[in-house]
Structure formats: C-alpha cells, structure tokens
Length: 372
Image (cartoon, rainbow, N blue to C red):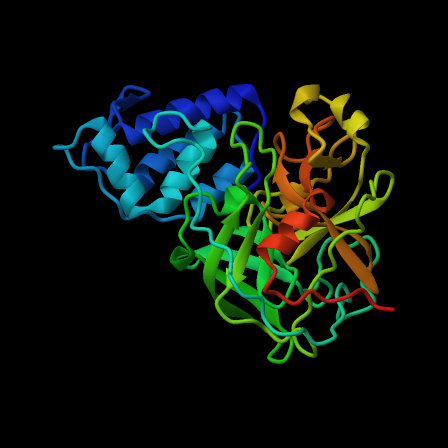
C-alpha cells in the first residue's frame, strides 16, 4: 500500500475522507444513512479509486472490515473523533489520504515512543544478510521466504497492511507512515521462524517514529518497531544487514520483496520479488515527479518504461542490494505514483542517512555482522 504522489488523486482522496468523517451527505445523488457502517463508506471510496487512486488503496480497503458506526446525535467533529478513538486504522488512513486535512489533530501526531535507559548485555556473534537458500529460478517473480528470511508482516487485528525487515534481535525497520497514530498494542508482527518452518506472531512493545517525518512530503519516512521479546539471531532467526555508510548505490540493481499486488490486482499469497535499477537523485528529479519532491533522504528505483515497480512489494518493505550470500537493506518502500507507470519510479527512504538514528533508538538490540 504505497502512498500516491499525484495531485488529482490527493484532491479526490481529500474529498472522500472529508465526506466519510463528516457523516456523509451524498455521493452520486445517493443519500448516506447517519448510522451506516464505516466499511460501507469505504466501499464508496473504493469505487472512487477507479478514477485515479492507487491499487494500494484498493487493496487496503478490500482487506479491512470496519465495525464502527456513526451516530446521528454527533456533530461532524465528534464523529471524526469517535472514529479515531474506536478505529485507529481509519485515523491512520484518513491522515495519510488527507495529508493532515479535516481533523483537529495535527499531522505530526506520533506513535508512542520512548528510549530504553539501559542497553542489554554484550551481544553474541551472529551473521546478517545471508539467505537460507542459495539458488532460485532466474527471472522468476516468486520468492521463497527462505531467500528473504528477515521479511516481516505488520498486522492490525489480523489484517496485513505493511511490511518490514528484521535488523536486530529486537527491532524491525519499517516506514514511519506505517506506524503513525498506532499504539504498540494494536500491531502484531509476523516473522519467519526457520526452526518451525512457518511464520510466527510476535508482540510489539514500542514504536519509534522519526520525529521529523513529514506527512506532506514523506521525507524521513522511517520507523523502528521494538519486539517485546528478543529473538535468537545466532542460530535461528536471520537479520538483514544495514547498508554501507556513505555509499550512493546508484547504478546497482535493487531487489524489492513483499506480499504486494499481482498484475491482476489481487493480493499475493506468496512472497514476490522484482529487480529494479537504482537511479541517481538527479535522474529521479528529471522524471515526471516535481524535482523538489525528491530529497537527499530518498532514493528512486525503477524503469523509465514502467512495467516493474514496488507495488509488487509493500509499504515499509525493503529495497535490497547484493546476492543470497550477502544482502543489505538500502531503501524502505515509501511512496510513488500508481503502479509501474512509465517515468514514475518507486521512491524509497535512503537507509544509510539514518544509521545513527537507528543505532540510537535501537541501542539495546544486537546487530549482526556481514559474513567474513
């Protein structure tokens, strides 16, 4: 569910979310009941998506079933506050789609964050970035979880909505827009357990959103999720390596992996991957995006002719470089225009701009070293 950049789409989404938060008047001449379930309101949003919104929003709406109702005795402002208090996922969606409009909350609302006072004891020696398989079908799009064992699912009430990457024995790296307005108790993490050959659930203890995340521009779109209990990264779980400091990565082939949408618009039941060339920021600024949208904290990857893109991955998921013997996370899926559209590359958070931020907020975690 990567976020759109198109101005027309933003305007459409603003109007729809404004309408849904204010109880609904009419859409296409049809009256909306004051007590209509929110999921029916969002079904109308799904129909409007067909005139220009992203497949990510379609997929997001199709996979969420809301139980919140709007009562007729409330003012529009009270309705909005009720929806936010009862369903934080709707609050998150509304904030993302409206870029901070139609709400008394500010767009800088942050998830619960706190820094641990004491780091854990000395960490055991462990290795990062090594796949559990060394071969695959060349050119194929399906990816075994064994090839990307650090891949993480973020779920709200059992519904998958964002991806992430295990970077230490206790921390998952994801996008800030994936945790905005959430509480730790509302999110569950699923990660692959090689010992049992299945995805297992892990409880979330804390969320660290970047204080400088800008919902208007998606600058500084990075966050950390702290697990309640550490995982065994010595001989069981596998972390991905953090990127080389100061390296640009332009000209390299990147790999995006995730449980994103297939070409027919359906949610993939298996992990998918796609290779995309990493651009220089100057090249990206010459694309169809406004040059001022692309900051030094971002990186772009994709084909000028389109066809392959990060919609086959997930918001918060990784952009990787390397091979099965050593992979490092250089980007986080952040935003873009549509899916694999010509001259609209995917835009990612540039991870090596935040290495100090990661180490500061995850100081109690054990980070593994690349293989020697």
